[in-house]
Length: 142
Picture (cartoon, rainbow, N blue to C red):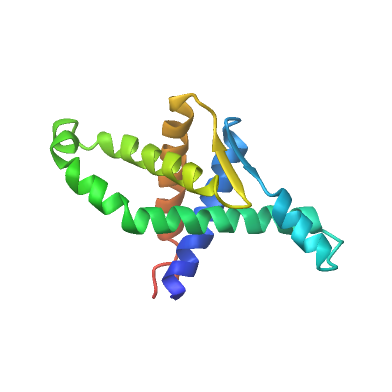
């Protein structure tokens, strides 16, 4: 359980940095902000709502990577071998698109513009950040 929470935090951080660098990634959290304001929290509501939105999308991305990505990676193993592993970037971009599609059914919307290269660059950024954050002492303990 602890490793899942750490993974969600790392995913949220990676998604935040990727959306900060790339203008085609966007997370809108109007429902989260409205729910916080309704509960009586008014100071810093926008910041808390954005943080919760990134953590929520990070959780969805973590679940997609835990359950869907291994199957897709296994089925695309011949293509991955032929491309010397570069096809994993396309798989990661597809997982981002799947996360975007799943989030369209939630109050927090994660959107990627229609340009495919935004998803590929975001996948590269998220992979690098996840690798670096995973090497931090204490992040891999479960």
